[in-house]
Length: 262
Length: 70
Image 1 (spheres, one colour):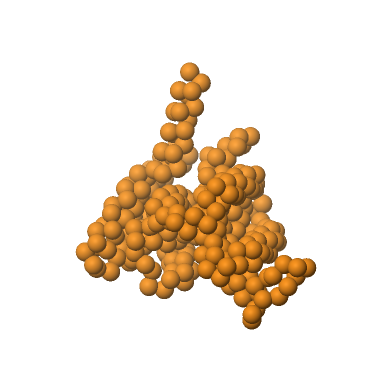
Image 2 (tube, one colour; image 1 turned 45 degrees about the horizontal axis):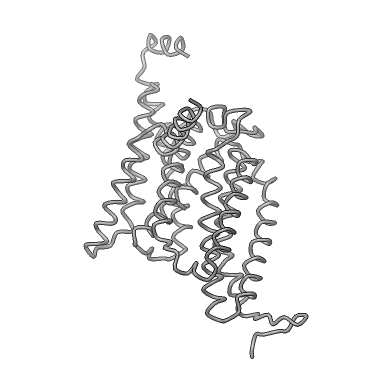
């Protein structure tokens, strides 16, 4: 049979393994992107605990349902997770725009957290946990469905599991390697772009969740992220314009009052 | 009492997570999702509505926040 190799007595269907690796890889990229974004902007501990929690829930689901996973309705899960990610992502996009407009791009470089009100010091960051948990459990569920669908259809579930596991390991290593690069980006700027990215994921899933297909399929995620990031930058430009026109209209007495209030 | 405090903290967490600083953004997202579903049910193209609503709601919200800080 073409594409089948015997490895120490176990038949590995190379075609199924590669197909699952590529298909699951797309979902795993999304999963790793959310965990790295949450870790870099909020708390690595919360992001990793959330990812671990998501994987545990997923393992329980896979163990309990097995091949019945194919019948799990993904649409309502996508709608709920997407809507929640979207409203949270928009809060960050909005905060990012306002903060960069007020303090500039460079502020916050090397800080551990975005600011004290976002991540209370000394306390576990439950928001970061929930974001990471939802991203990993939804994407993980989609990976599990791909494994069951591709592996089950070809009668090579083991090969499909190998392909998906390889995708998780390879992309998790890539995600871990990008940490130092991301740590160099000022936190305010990161908050704006992570807000755009989370909003893109949220929009993509929520629209799929109401049963509407994207004309460009998975590519919609990319153009949505670009649209929101460019929209955020345009908004930043607008805010600076509004602020400078307000400063220009302010009388010396107003300026004294504003300085006193700060 | 500990249970009541825990429930209150849980509810506060989700309100903060969903509503945040401006409830109108979350309300617009909800309304846009309902409208997307309605357009889809009517057999019309609907994928464009949520991104358009998101950009509009964020612009209005940021504009309002900028006016407040003046």
